[in-house]
Length: 319
Length: 319
Image (cartoon, rainbow over the protein chains, first blue to last red):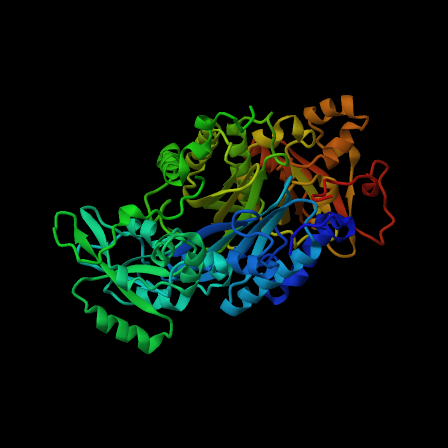
């Protein structure tokens, strides 16, 4: 469904800001608390907390992160969940969200309603109120930006720094082919992230947004290279499907498609990966794979099926 | 200066995301702390605080909030200061900012550099680090969205609720004609807001973004009407200048132009407005005006120069 309409009475411009904000508040329902804790004042207020706070901001943009093939509910879900995924990647818990919406005149009111209803559903699911936002006119298209504030669940948060030589490299779920639907249907690995941050042998973490082949370098410590085993990469069905029409291998899709929103993390080399996976399985049904190890650059050890990462390039924005 | 260029080597698309983020970090310099407190991880982290936290989000959009007449530095200043103004309007103190930038391919690198340098200057001025953000491609234009987190400076924050009948209505500064330059040159009333929240007789507050004629209704309690005195409205020189070409009165400009970013607030009716202004003058050089009073709707009292607000409409977005 296209988010736009030529019928003036069905477009947001028919309403103006005051009515629009009124309706948005209605669409959000219990997902937005009363002002000043909710929408309607110069700022939203949030109770203080002595835990480390986490801030992340990510947009969804028409023509970039979604198109007419993604339903409005999927756009809202993607916006919320990709921000939650960033909180998950630090091992945190989301607390509250604000949304800045930039819209052209011809956005359908019904599109906007479904968009906000899906935000409300996710807000209720995770107990993350939408406490404020802004709505503005833009000459063309839709740019919806969410800022999510969260907090640490443990004394530490998991950053991209902290991996060391010999660390095992793990990924949750399956990779690749997200454009066939996963990119707006995924479930952020929130509880998984909180479980991982509580394990002291987990040393660094991020979520996979540009593909493992590119993202893994963000976890790789100085003087090391990531040695990934081709056979261990959890290739998704969508990656295999995408490969049937793309002239590229399913593995290439798994490593470079991006928007997987899985957790990529490293575990102290002294941990037994099989035991780690056993512990995981007692808690989660989702897949966990040990896909390789951080090796010192000077080490000559090369496994037969080690992936030559130089031949894969993950998604780079603005190029 | 237009933010766009047809010369490919001078456009952001020449760089790609990795280089761009690297340069942004350089442009921001000391205005952005090191990761994970600064740019570069899935989330930015911020120390916990037991004070009430404040969240506000506002964009600047090409063609809406700025055009080729506003220099890149002015665009950055406007983005930062309009968010600071929202924190000021609650009597708070800004703590940290995140920025989501959506850009078309043809944005000039030099434009972006000046934009970020002005953000950095304001960040240093107010000791508000830029701790994270996102940069994404969009099909056309520039949409820059800042989320600012702040915190209360007193036990309370000043909201739009809290005014009562007989409350005096005050505004800082002068009003109107902001399009002649004020809208990107203004100084947010941050210290003023903190001084006001510390005075118990100040009962409600907001900043003027759509013009006093529209905004004052947000402070007006049920059963009341705002009685504003025409002679008391602080009409700016820009409003007078705008009126010379607009067929509208300077007063109309002062009441409806919007983007004044002055503080509009109410004070307990038992306070002497002249004494209040005297106290203000001991602390601030900027103008303060008592422009009217909240009257019960049923009161028949009408001053000779009371403004008929129904004949003025403030700026309404998306209309």
